[in-house]
Amino acid sequence: MQTPIDWQAEARRMRAQGKTSVEIAALLGEAPSAVREALRGTRLPAAAGDDAKPLGAGATLIERRVPRTPRVILDQVALTAAARAFAAGEIDRAELLRRISR
Image (cartoon, rainbow, N blue to C red):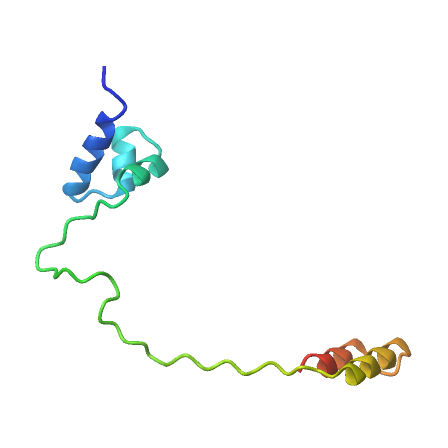
């Protein structure tokens, strides 16, 4: 009888051979989440001719992040006037939202 730890050693051996966690789970009859947990921290072997850079290393951004525009703080008078105009039926909902969503 195998102990519960044996499948984890077998999973690490299969990972060293280059199998993915889904393939290992199917071969061992374990849940993919359990296999991923057992293999946490175990890397796939590097492909031939592959340097040791992680994915995305050395990549450049196409465009820089656009700075955030500061939020406009509405004064209480404008907010109250827009709400009263909407309640009186003078303006519709779109106009109300335009006035209070600057």
